[in-house]
Image (tube, rainbow, N blue to C red; front, top):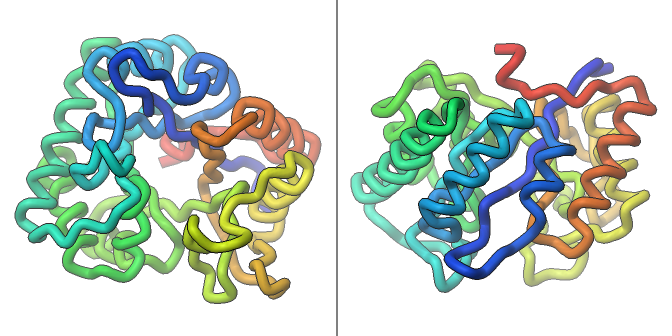
Length: 256
């Protein structure tokens, strides 16, 4: 049984005057913040505000890097050349790290967003491109991704710290992947169910797939999406359930 687990959420996903989610409230619940870097959402002012809030709350900052796809919120696959993708990821990572340092903290890990996250589960070339960018910027950074993914394999091969991640509010396939958002069962909305799934991941290292089968989910970090309706209440329910189960929410960067 795990005695601690990281709790992360996607933050800073507004753009300009548009706000998405309650970043300030979530910073009071999570232990790690995946901050949008401007390619799928976010802008310099938002990035700075979230980094300042994270520093004040003692929350670890991660760069949530994406395809260059503001209109599609980074949820559309882009068949970009690996050398270009590596440059795009490096650009986002370096920008957020500079802002984070100005606010008294720094980027401690990298997590792809949306379609890029799903692509690097099996797309070897794009997975290596993301890892190449991380190595170029700071080989001490951790990489957050799906267990068994090409991304985590590439990260480990490059000497980076691979961190397996689970999703309390997303449906899983029988193969251990995420159910595509356009399909039924992709998102779990019931707070009690989301909380129970998080506890099961942390305590047993498993999750129940949409077909009812049990699949391995030994994770070091659990994500609750910050852009879903009721995200703050959902995150609080997850944190409370974890604590009641004897699992302490702790940033994975504190243990490595």
